[in-house]
Length: 80
Length: 291
Image: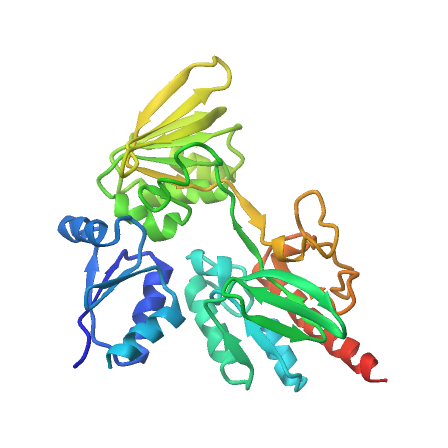
């Protein structure tokens, strides 16, 4: 079953762009939440990750902070 | 990446070890002086570099931080933070620079909880909040420009008079939501779970001031990532790796290129040129070893 992926981003964050590109290239569906404009999403991100940096990637409840390709690849492949 | 492409084109057996690809360029959204582009965003440029790199049969190991490089019989070895070791007859060291930290109480504890070194990434997270931007150069003023439309109050705190380009200072100075505090030293970052305020000291009067902010965007310059080779050679006063015009470091088989070296003018095009040169020189070195 495909993992539920949520990413918390800001419009100007280059690492967020790399994360989205990575997910798209690997055909991983995701929901994006813009924490710059969506205050509820911002609080949600801080609650989940205990910090305020972006991107934050929630993969079925497991939180990855920042773009780290090897870690994302490992966690997404494990769930496929 | 440029060095890797040149190494691959010389059919060298090479491996590229990095935490991520792109480095400082990824955090520059306005590149206007890389030839062939009138204007390009840094991440887009690095994506093109990466696409070109992937055309070549060169192994790329990401998510790795090299902590130490040592001399071994016949060459050098690079030891990563995960304990993996890579051995080679030659090593090309091009680790660039990282953000300088304030080194004040509270900074490390609140890193990611209001303290950020990537204004471009995290600045918008503080939209609607008061922030402090620490620094007085172009990076700090660029962060000010980006935050002026997002933040109700920005404190620009600089240890010295502003050193940024006059046009950047002029564009920002009239903003009603900007307070410029030059010759002020940041002394502490305060907050329990997240940043709540910073303490700064007026260096002229000695007065300590508490600034109520939710975000601290640190833009005070860069430091070379030279620690892995510090045990092999003598760094210069700025912590950079000295190289000659052939990118040689003086340690047999160890070449260096880019912003981590003492080559002046830290520009993308200069770093690329040095990377290409270093790879070509490494190739010549390896050929001489065979003779």
